[in-house]
Image 1: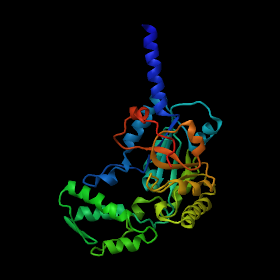
Image 2: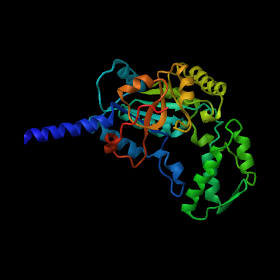
Image 3: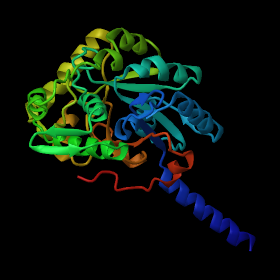
Image 4: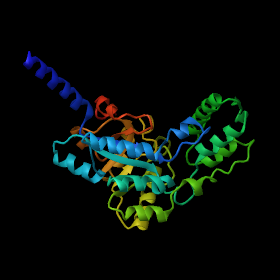
Length: 327
Ligand SMILES: [Zn+2]
């Protein structure tokens, strides 16, 4: 009887190990307080500092260890048999990464990576998701292109946001501003107005880069989806941005995250391009934990797990092992 129980327990522990991988890379965007009556898709890019701190403490309590991307890279290369490693990454370069998240990570001695899109500190980011959020909140009805959208209630506003977002994602990337202006010709919108309040400055990024806990990674110049660009444009988007960051922080950029790194935006063509640039690690937004098999894909396609306020620590063990890379 005892043996049966032990067999059963070892089976369960095998399943848990099998599903949890050796490490989980969390993807965050913003660490900031939630705002009443703002729209869900944008608010969902945030976790609160209270949640982040509680989450870190819970992970520590359960025996998880926090490592940097460089350490993850060394573990995979040496094929060291580890479990329960956690890596935090934050995408784009939001100001709250510096003003709020940094102090939480520092307090608990947790390494983290910020992937910087250089249009953010250059204050040239087309933050259309905040501009259209304001527009939807301020109006009960909108005419966008040929379509009329009714957005009188909070539910309608959230739905309309997603519908308009779909339209914007279909616009040509390099002429995004022209496309937006044409689509919203009935409205006067300053598409850059949130840059000062929302984006990190170069001073913030330089200060972060000097802390041993922080790794600065590349995230392109303009955050265009790669599947809408040709090969030369992709190289330019990556290399120009990384050169600028390297000049500012005086360190080499060795880690990269795709802007829009989902299955529909990046695949074999983009992986081949990125491989030729020899980054130490390249992360996507594909959902999954890291396995030893990922050693082959370190420089082109490592999955992450999006951290949202309702994420529970027990979810880590439940992330099913997917095919490591599906091309
Ligand atoms: Zn991004």
